[in-house]
Amino acid sequence: MDIIHYVFFQRALIAGVLAALACGVIGVYVVVRRSVFLADGISHAAFGGIGIAVYLGWSQPLFGALSASLVMAAGVGIAGIRTRLREDSVIGILWVLGMALGFVFLYRAPPEHLLGVSINSLFFGNILYIRESDLYLMAILCIIIIIVAALLYKELLALSFDEEFARISGVRTGMLSIILLGLIALTVVLLINVVGVILVVALLAIPAAMAGLFTYDMRKMMMLAVFLGIIFCVGGLFISDACDLPSGATIVILAGAGFCLSFVGKKVLTRIMVHRTKTTDSSRKMDTS
Amino acid sequence: MKDEPVIEIQNLWVNYDATVALKGVDLTVRKGDIFGIIGPNGGGKSTLLKAILGLVLPTRGTIYILGEPPERGRRHIGYVPQFASFDREFPISVLDVVVMGCLSRKPRVSWYAKEDRIAAQDALKFVGMLKLANQHISSLSGGQKQRVFIARALASKPEILLLDEPTASVDQNIKESIYDLLSRIQKSMTVVLVTHDIGVMSSLVNRVACLNQTLFTHYDNKLTAQMLEDAYRCPVDLIAHGVPHRVFEPHDHKNHDQRGG
Image 1 (cartoon, rainbow over the protein chains, first blue to last red):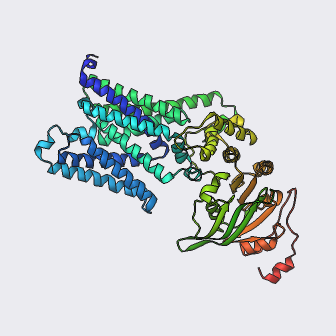
Image 2 (image 1 turned 180 degrees about the horizontal axis):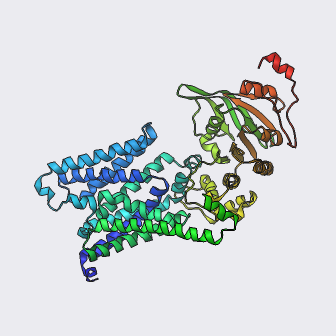
Image 3 (image 1 turned 90 degrees about the vertical axis):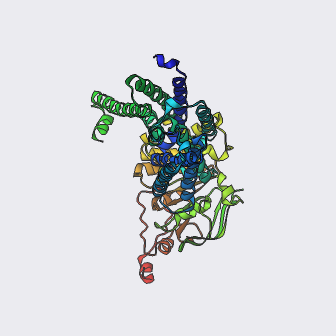
């Protein structure tokens, strides 16, 4: 536990908590709207922005990620409203385009710009190397995400549950969908430092999906997802330190294992309950289903 | 005023690309009416509702709801969609679904307040679902869900209730209880419902029209075999077993034969 006295580790812990806050709230929307593929696409497209930022020698490549993921989010949103293209095709195309652009720009980047840039940490996270400036950016993004999500809570809930009803009730659903896509893009950028572009979707999907196993109230689901996200990020950090494992991947494995265990555990518990009340009508129904 | 028109539609045409969905529809719904619109699948019933709700723009013609165009007038409408096609796994309680009915009268960027929850609870009480308020919406049966969606429409205390196939995909008992609910609602607001359930028309409505791209109405507002034939373009037998009030005209088969179907 001595490691906790190191500044780099304290920063990593703060980064983990910030990531958990954002992904708990936005991850619930991603999960209930079945947009996990979209979130994955945005995170991969962000790699293109990082490549361009490194090529241009920006001091904060996350601004590149931010631009690229917002462009991807806007592209998917506008394509959905203005064209008849299938959404998953648009996501797939922008996803690979972003990745390929990222590679090309990194390949051609001047060597002096590549100092301190590691493909490995871009892909799988570099939470132990987070700088103070990264933390400030993450904190600002986190505040923006939570404020917007809180202010638009009832509209976002209506949009996600019943889009037609939201429109009839006067919500500008097209605009709101794009705002939500923007929030997903901001969250993705916030998470890139923690787990890298390839593993971002794990932190968006797993805590929210796991919380969904235990509650059908969206606010409780968000709070539980934040709590689980903090457990996974902090727990993963300590495990990765103790076992000398890469931090991003360890966080994701911990989260994945937590999800599988709680899913199986819930099934087993339900079975036991059903066995106990086998004589009642309702239990017979559950058994056959 | 009892006879005040609440929905006025004049010469409404709606095209989807090259397909004509509605051809010159004229319709006046007056305050206190319980207006049934019947017609075959693909006859434009849903399009007409969407046009009234401002979700589809007319190609030609005008729609006024309490004297306002649909985008503004729809705030006076409580809408009950056809077999609510929401995601079964969506994490939302019955009460939260019904509170959503208050969305149209809340300012943007605000939260639901206590009075919204009270309005929602009153609406749930009215449809007899208050005791299930905290249940997950997907744990309800089809008929219970239909009641919850009626409660959502009532929560905003609308002037007009608009229902799309309220008795589709529920069994006979539940149909009866929904008719009963609608007849109680009709005392305090105008009801417009679209259906292909002829039973509901016979027992409940006081004005009817048949829609198959064009709208067929009848002067004394009774559903006649003639109207159904015009709408369905084939002879229709009006069989209404065990319904309290028959509004159907007796019809003789000779007429049908002469018309040749």
